[in-house]
Amino acid sequence: MLAAVLGAASLAGCSSTGGKRAEDRAAAAEAQGRAAVSTPKWTFAMVTHSGDGDTFWDIVQKGAEQAAVKDNINFLYAHSDEGQQQAQLVQSYIDKGVDGLIVTLAKPDAMKAVVAKATKAGIPVITVNSGSEQSKQFGALTHIGQDESIAGEAVGDELDKRGREKALCVLHEQGNVGHEQRCAGAKKTFDGTMQNLYVDGTNMPDVQASIEAKLQADKTIDAVVTLGAPFADTAVKAKETAGSEAEIDTFDLNEAVAGSLKAGRLGFAVDQQPYLQGYEAVDLLWLYRYNADVLGGGLPVLTGPQIISKQDAAELEKYAERGTR
Image (cartoon, rainbow, N blue to C red; front, side, top):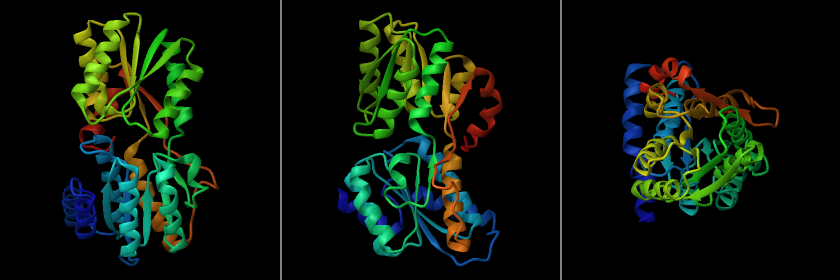
């Protein structure tokens, strides 16, 4: 299967599942607008740890594609939630001789060697979303995203403000260091007790069943924190079938989450502005190629966290509906 994924990446410049859609969106954007610069048509590639159907990464991708149109960039995209496959996709872009790379480091051990190969080949690398602690060590120009530990601490503080006493932190991707940091940060600042629940994020019925079982077994759980927007609605369903009164909260924002916040089905969301992560990554690579500019001064460029509650949802819903928040 990997050979098929890599084959599609080399032919279409993106993953077998998401690449055609990415190319169609980019082509449509180019048809509606024109580059704002006259620099060469450089090629930048982004390789993320996204699984199939994750709406968060659609937003990251949209930001990157729109910046690419402005900056006269040929933008390529690929993804795999398996660390070794993600590394091989990066290697395929190194072999193609791209002019810049954007990668995530959710599983840094799997990515370290291939990022080193890119920098050795003279390809500038920017990390986004995951891997702020490893980014500089691996030789990236900068990291764009939220500090996962700080984001987790913000969740613990918010749960305290809401008077919660016993929480469940639902981790949907085994081995993702950012997810572990989020839950650990929340535990650090939360005055109550928090338990981790590991689920298979590629199987939503399993996610719902696992959360439901926990809520049925322990009626004192009064908060469930999911680590991605697509899992929030599943947690709401689990709460309803379990007959629980727990508040459902989540990391990340999308159209469905904005609507659920507005309707009161969710307590709060932690927004890390994925559109900005994609947009700024492409823009900063262009700035580096054009003018040797680097932002951050050796520190990550933070895009979050921002706590979004019911009163904020109405203002942000229109942006979520168009797929940019």
